[in-house]
Figure (tube, rainbow, N blue to C red):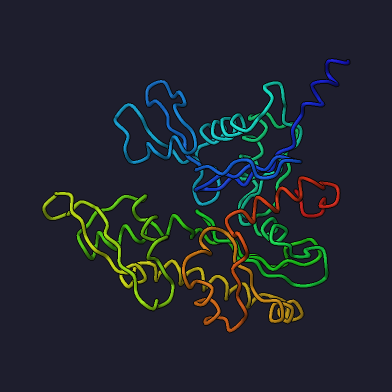
Length: 340
């Protein structure tokens, strides 16, 4: 009995933002301890895990025929059950300070629009990775808590969380989601739009890592003053030879027109379904943007122009969801109403 008690004392409580692009881990009492890409490198023959996180990201789009890199999450949900379990297990192993420690409770955030089957897949992966108890929380709720909104009050708050695989929009009041809208458009879709644009309009084939760099450095939702330029390397589709081209922020803005329009339209649809009293609160308090996609230059300005309401980008939007999930982990009883 004493031995069991000793092992229980080593138990750890963990919160995970299991994202399509990045996974962040929060440990109770320690805060955010890990932020790494959600990618696994495997041996094609043996299916042995060769690398996880940053190490696997370095291999991505550079592997030979014996190695493949897999992102087990697609559009915010688990697409490859076995690899997702390996991802969670190996990332947790990176941050466990004691080899004997077990996972007592795990809080995992999920997109608000996922099905019960998809929720079951998340639960099973977390349990197989070693968690004794698994709780789920909707991403927009976690984001709202993470940026300091009073989700338990009878006041309407609107959060737009733009992640790697999905954009989650929700109106929150009294510890619940009143109206939500989830679209499978996020950072990955934006990167893919850049790849396709330069392939179609400039006969230049670029990788998704290059597309992400373009998005971060010269991507924008509105006109810039001055406009920016960037030299990129890709393969000329006519000659088949690697080339360097100079691209402008105007080109990138054109490439992003469709996915950004889809995000803005989803925000409008959510506002149209919002009860008038809560809509009045949003008029006073504004719309909060979180997630990596919210860092696109001028996105808040574009949405503000479409809805004619105040729009703000949260402080440190990349970690808003995991900070909120961690806050819930620190006081599970106090936040019981927001968990499933």
